[in-house]
Image 1 (cartoon, protein in one colour):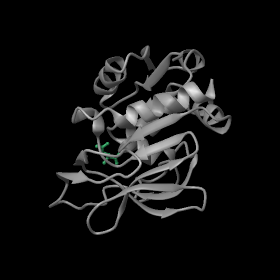
Image 2: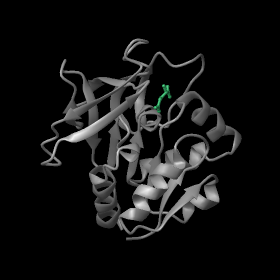
Image 3: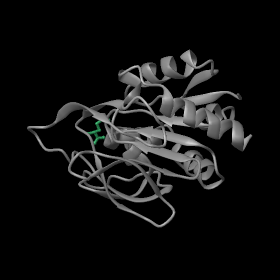
Image 4: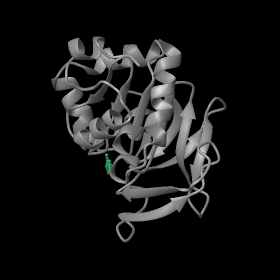
Length: 195
Ligand code: GLN
C-alpha cells in the first residue's frame, strides 16, 4: 500500500495514525500541500469542523485537498471529517466551508445536547459481522444523499450515519476510538485500487 495521510490540523489525528499503522500502512500526518503530494489517500479526523476549515485556509492546504478529491484520491472522514467531505452543510458557523466531494447534505451537531455523545451497535451489511460498535461525539447526521451515494449505516430511528461515494467514505461516528478497523481497511483497499 502506498503512503497515506491523516489531515493533522486539529482533531484526533493520533488515533487514526494508530489505526492505520495497526493495519500495516505507512501513515503520516499531513499539514501542508507538500505533504499531501506524497500520500495516495487521506483520512480527515474527528474534531471541530469549523476549526479544520479555518486552519486549512491558514495553512494553505484547502485548495490542494479539493483538487486531489476532484481527481479521485480516496478519502475517509470521521465525524468532523464527514462534515468536511459534504457538498452541503446545515448548521455550520457563519462562513463555514467544507472541502466537498460527497453529494450529500450533512447537519452538524445533529443529535442535540442530551444525546451529545452516545455509543451503540450498528449492523452494517457492507462490513458483515460482528456489528460495529459506534461512538458518537457531538455527531453530525446525513440528511440528503444524491443518486451516486451509497448508504452504509443508519441509527435505529433511520437517520443516516455512514455513506460512501466511489473513493469517498464518511462516518458520523468514530471507529478509531473503538478499536474498529474495518472502515480503515476499506479505505486502504480504495487506496490500493486507485494506485
Ligand atoms: N461537532 C463537531 C463539528 O461540528 C464534530 C464532532 C466530532 O468530530 N466528534 O465539527
